[in-house]
Amino acid sequence: MMKLQQLRYLVEIERRGLSISAAAEALFTSQPGVSKQIGMLEEELGVTIFERSGKRLTAVTAPGAVVLAMARRMLSEAQNMKRVGADYAAESSGTLSIATTHTQARYTLPPVIQRFVQHHPQIRLHIQQGSPLQVADWVLDGSADLGIATEALDRHPELLTLPCFQWAHLVVTPKGHPLQERRPLTLAALADYPLITYDATFTGRSRIDRAFERQSMRPNVMLTAIDSDVIKTYVGLGLGVGIIAEMAFDPLRDDALAAIPATHLFEGNTTRVAFRRDIWLRGYDYDFMELLAPQLTRHMVEATQKGEGADPGL
Image (cartoon, rainbow, N blue to C red; front, side, top):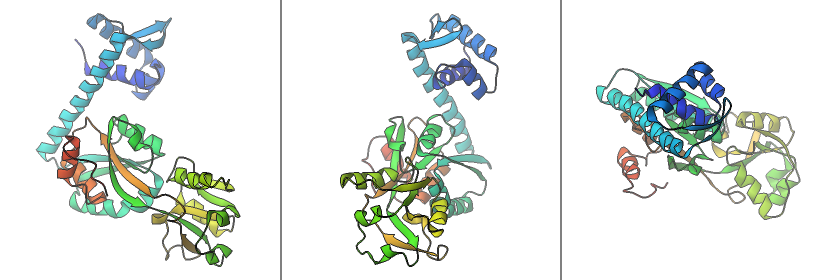
C-alpha cells in the first residue's frame, strides 16, 4: 500500500537532481532503503517513474512527472492537515520558521519579533539566515514557513509574494571625508573612490550596479560582504566608501561615520514576504505578517490568496 514516506522519497530525489544518495542523506535514511521503496511504488502503480542507466537515475518519465506533481500536492495537503489541527486546537506550543537575509534579521526583524513574542509567548521562533536564493529555496522546500528578502522571492510562481516596505541605500564615509562636501552627491564622485558594499545577490546590490551601468561607469568595488556591520567596519578603517541599506545606519551607534543620502542615485528597493501558495497559514503566521507590515492584514492576505484582490501595495 502506498505510503507518504514513499512520496517524500520521490519528491526529494527530484529535488536532489535525481541523486538517490543525496536524497537518502537529506532524509536521514539509507540509499538501498530509498531505492527499494521507489521500486515498490513503481510496481504498485504499474508505471516507471524514473528512467535508469544501470543503478543511476537519468530522467523522469512522462507518467513519472504526473506522479511527482500529485505527490507534491499530497505531501502539501498532509502537512496542511497537521497545521490545521494545531491551529484550531490552539495548542500551547508551535513553531514559526522564518528564512531571511542578514540585513533583515539584524535590523528589521528585532522589534517585530519582540512584539510577536509578547503576543504569542508560547510559539517558538526559528530564524534561518542566508542569501535571497537560499531564502526562496527554504520556503519552497518547506524548511521555512515565511521568507523575507528583497531579491529572488518574486521569481517563483509557487510562492505568493507580498510587498512589505520600501527602503533606499545610503553612502557612508568616515567623518571628515571629502565626499561630505559634494552635495548633491554624484555617481562620478563615488567612482573616484574604492567602494565597499554588498555581495552581488544581496540587499539591492543589483540596483547599485545598474545605476553605474546606465552611465557607462565601472565603479571600483574593492570589497563586498553580506553583513552591513562588516561593511561599516572597513569603512571606519578608511579602506573605502560604503554603500549600505538605510536601516543599517544608526547615528548613535555609528558615531564615527557620516551618512550621505543616495535616493537620487539608486532605485528604491522593496522588501517582500513570501510563502507557498499551497500552504495553510496559521493564525500566528498572519499575525507575524501584520506586525512586519501593517497593511498585510489577515483579510488582505486571504483576499490575495483567493485572487480577489490586487497586490496590496505599500
